[in-house]
Amino acid sequence: MKQRKIPMRKDIVTGEMAPKKQLVRVVRNQDQEVSIDPTGKMSGRGAYIALDVAIAKRAKQERTFDHVFSVKIDDQFYDDLIAYVDHQQARRELFDHD
Image (cartoon, rainbow, N blue to C red):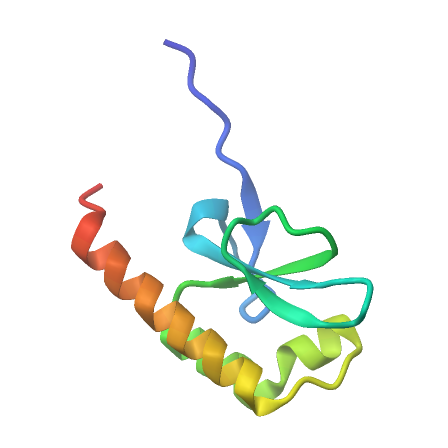
């Protein structure tokens, strides 16, 4: 059977390449609103971050998405991102047995 190509994306906090499924997409739409994109298909400018709470906290500390999207983002977004990453990380540990 033919091996399928695994799509890779760059984590904007660490700069490391990782499989797309191990990252979460954050998107800025035309109205300059920044949100988490769980489907990976929302329209707009996207950036990826690893499913790791420590990296999400580092993104909040460095205000990474403010710089990437050139938009002032409030702390509530970063808190929501940390909670989302924590939840997804816990789900991955429970259900993925790869």
